View 1: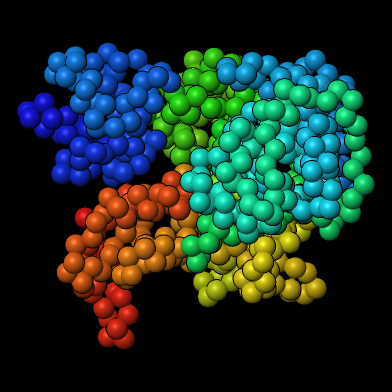
View 2: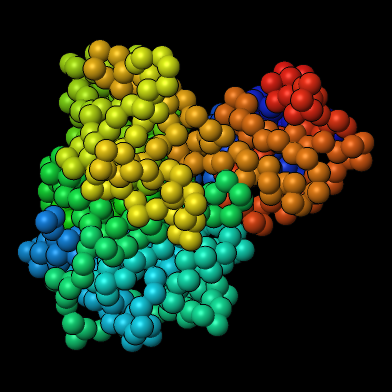
Amino acid sequence: MEIRESIKIWLADALGCSSEEIHESGGIGNTPGWDSFGHLNVMMELEKRFGISIDDDTVRRYQTVKAIEELVEEKGS
Amino acid sequence: MKRDVVSRFCEIARAHPEHAAVVTTERGTCTYSALLRFAATVRARVLEHSPKGGSIAIVAEQNELGYGAMLGALMAGRGYVPINPGHPPLLKKEIIEISESSVVLAKGAGANLTSDKCIALDLERIWEEVDTTAELVDEVDLDFDESIGYTIFTSGSTGRPKGVQIFRHSLNCYVDWAVDAMKISTADRWSQHPNLGFDLSVLDVYGALCGGATLFPITSPADRLMPARLIKRERLTIWNSVPSVLDLLNRASQLNQDHLGSLRLATFCGEALYPRHLEWLFEANENLIVHNTYGPTEATVSCTLVTLTVSNFTQFCRDTVALGDPIVGMKLRLDGRGNGSQGEIWLAGDQLSKGYLKRDEETQKLFVEDKGERWYRTGDLAEEIDGQLYFLERLDNQVKVNGYRIELGAIAARVMKLTNLTAKVVLINGRLCCFVENRGEPLELENLTAQLQSCSESYAVPEVFHEIAAFPRNQNDKIDLKKLVEEYGD
């Protein structure tokens, strides 16, 4: 639960929306601010926090809250 | 008479057959001779399957298949209808139906887009079975002044897509200008960012292929997010983009010599260019030439130009960067409304559209005769300062998001149709916000968003929904939009 909340907080920060607007079924196109600019911010956060390299695979993969949660669970917060 | 784009392309392809026309990571290099052969085969297939005429819908990715389909349709003397392959199927089908296309050229699964009135041809299959004996037609026998080159669809005010018909003559004039003004040569390596359903791609495709340059479509997700990576990797010399991409590059810390050093020319169109954009660009590459251009789809991509360099750009900067002067064959005037130096931009000349497909009333309203000349009223308000023109705002309910034209009323119309409730859509801090008067009954928002996604362009689906039991109204019982945004817009 705590991990989820912390993801919501930094995601909201990256997207410029409030954490209440980040839903578990959220992702690119259905979350405020998660357009191409927002996605770039999300990817740069992932790069900074978890050392994820920004390539075609990761840009495609981390387009949803769920995929990011799975990554964080795997890497540990 | 301007030279036809097909003649220009054929001449280049015959002079430089082994030169790279298109390069992608997925498909490798496509030479000019291969592209010419493919286009000739497309022409033959179109004439074989649709001998009686009719427009050609093209639903294709940005690569040699899409570009060859455009050239092949023109070689067949037909007008084509480019459709963004990323559109939802319902929208694609609606455009194909409105345009009464007789053929759909698509990759693979185009069959689900056809009806009993048209047939689908698989571009991949045409590529695999390219006909080396197909006739090469350098000169198309056609009245270019009267024939449609392409019809591009934008979102219409009623929620139905609206087809802007561009004469082949207009396309020829525009390309003639581009090849000359941009000094294109076989040494140029040119990015291709906008999808084929967005008319900014017309400049990339014909400018490059009629000038002998090599096109590098930006298709990979990471490159689309950070196009400067491709500019650096492929040592590109020409980059054509909407200005907002510069904000992305800035965020990614890629506006520097390392990433942009190979560029000789950057062109911008589709939305306002700001002074900060120019400062970033010239700091990264002081030898760069920047073309800022302006124009609506109704005047064939763009019809003004200001050429900016590190030494002259500040004189063209106010709140935004100047729009420039009309290009050869085009006229621009401000239709004054009260305040002397401000007015609506009116355009006339070779690049003016025939009008909207099957929308005579709207065409007559916006394309008007004045002093013996046909003018298009753009709906863009501009101001003249020291002989330079600066964009101010739209006069109607239209906004632009990432260069895409959006009619706010059209989105509200869609929401109202789906919910049977009153809705208003506004742009707040770059985000589409939809207000719905739910009369106290909460909406099923996920369901509504999914329905909107299935019938609209992805950029035209509101990001934020505000449900309000009853909208504020003024004394005349009209919705008070200002109050609505002030009270509920956060």
